[in-house]
Image (cartoon, rainbow, N blue to C red; front, side, top):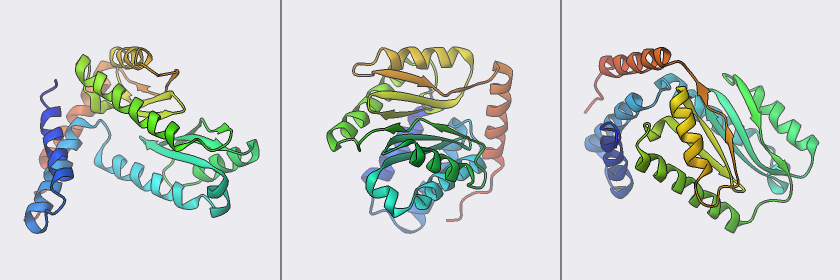
Length: 216
C-alpha cells in the first residue's frame, strides 16, 4: 500500500470513531487530516472546496417538486459534475443538467441520468456495496494510489473520476470491470502525461508544506 495512504486511513478512522472530540485537539486533528488529503489528492485545496460547494448548490437548486419524483446524485470532481440517478422524462433530465451548468465554477456536466422510476433502497445499498468493493480492490492491487480515483456506482454501473496517467487509468478500468456485480464501467477519468502528473503533485505538496499551521 502506498505510504501516503496509511496516515490518511488512520486520520479518517480517528475522525469517525471519536465523534466526541472537541476543542483544540479536534481542530488540530481536522487540520492534520486536511493537510494529508491535500498531498494525496491531485486537486488543489481550492478545487476540492469548489467541488464540495458545487455539490451542495446543485442539491439545493433541485426544486422540491422534482425531488419528489426524481432520484438524482451530484458528484463534482475537478469542477466537472457527474449526474446520475433517475427522472421521469427527458425534459426533467435536460432541465437539471442546464441548471447545474449555470452554477459558479462548473466547467462541464456529464449527464448520465436515466429515464426510469426511482431506484429502490435495496438497489442503492447494493450500489454502495459495489463501490466499497471496487475501492478495496484498488487498494489491494496497489497499482496506483486509490484516492486518486473516485468511484460512483448507480444501478450497477461504475463511474470512475480522477486525474491520472494512462497506466493508472488502464489499471482502474480493468479492476472495476472485473469486480463482481459490476454491470458496466464509464471511464470519466482525466488522463494527463507523467510529466504533468509530477508537476501537479509537486505543486500540491509544496502548497501543503508552505500552508500556515492550524491554530491550536
